[in-house]
Image (cartoon, rainbow, N blue to C red; front, side, top):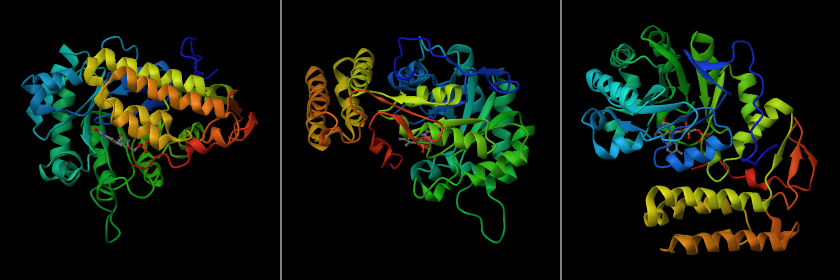
Length: 383
Ligand SMILES: Cc1cc2nc3c(=O)[nH]c(=O)nc-3n(C[C@H](O)[C@H](O)[C@H](O)COP(=O)(O)O)c2cc1C
């Protein structure tokens, strides 16, 4: 049963030896992708309540963490989270990364350390971090060896296939690197199959995930454009990845995790009703307020519009939320947006929604009952 976080969720039986990374066992194959500026503690709590098997910190600077920078330490706070917590580090000095990894595990209880070799932001690339590391294979391996020696938890790497599509019949940089990563002590590689030069443009090329999984013996995690339970299961079936990450599609749709679990375990899932969606939005807002107090109004200017996307008049409500400086009034505006959609019912007002009854889909993704138009999924996945 989807969308009722009060009920204990039925976890589907795992295939073979189960899901995991190195010695870390996971309850399902659906992970929350790391997203800087997005996957803060409240966001993670929403995803965990719906069944995310592993969450990541926002990307943390190894340099800052090794000096115990207060802001960076705050990123590592995961009090009350009951699933494994991965800390993603960026850095380019082996000793600094190793020290940061030690601090993250020994002092902050990280269950896994991930090294970012994926970030395509110009500033990050110019400083030789993120995806820029892919063009320095020996440095990459040195970083991994140093961190793997420093900690007892599994080490993973998240990367792009390379800086740019290879020329002259060469293979993507990640293929050349992958074997070395394995012997450097890396337990899983997470691949977002767009070259760094693409940013987020075009479609994720999952044939690159398949190619990687054919070349390495360690766990491969796929990440890119999963925006429905059907696409999550399809990628697990077809790409050779044994775990997948859900990223942008979870913004305003934390229940996607529960739907993936239901489709995997029971062969069908239901869509949340408007009032359930409102409940999720209000809960997320209150968690932000618990975390930040009155300053929560600022992140909520991005967060609440995710939840009202597709409702009638969403853009007007979004503008009002973005100009509102009072937390209580932000909640009133979201509530008003949903109440207007509920009053409009199944007709023109239910744009992008499943109507008041919710709806259930079968394995093919076709509606088994209810009158959904599925429009909420359209247009997702682009940022
Ligand atoms: C706002 C935003 C921030 C992100 N930050 C990170 C990050 O800090 N580290 C990282 O490895 N990937 C980061 N990513 C990439 C995601 O983890 C994911 O690989 C990518 O968005 C593709 O998956 P999706 O289509 O499911 O969103 C970020 C993506 C977005 C949209």
